[in-house]
Image (cartoon, rainbow, N blue to C red; front, top):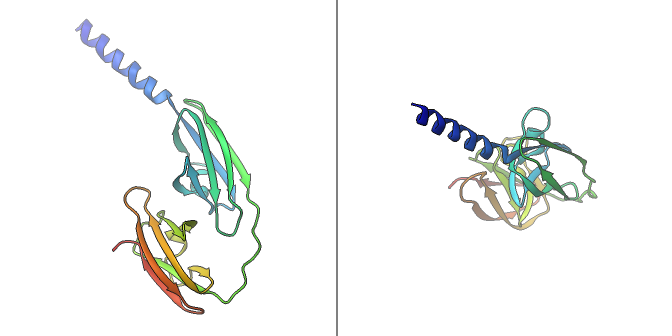
Length: 173
């Protein structure tokens, strides 16, 4: 029985050490709809991880990129300490407004936090572009739209956008 207790205690201490290797990141970004990328991987919109939720990250240095199509991308390095919360607060710089005419891309049939890329540029998450009043205003032309789920394989579609028309893209085949 004494041996069993020591083994159980050792297991708890070992698991505690694994947990201690992770730290947390809170992001407060303006605009809140900016996409957060950790070491190049999209993890969700910034507004999800500001006040109550946080990203769990392994201890060490990480590159954080904030991306929003109407703003200049912002990249910062942060150091995560095990068991501690690191806070990142940033205000992004607005880009000049584009000139019309525009067509609209609407994305349907996906999970709300799946990332949407157009010609390899991050544009937001599906929840921003999936109903009658939403969409991505974009100049007419040919584009490659990629939907990148938080987990799983991306779906890529080539579309032609026409002025004053809505082009629908299905996130799942």
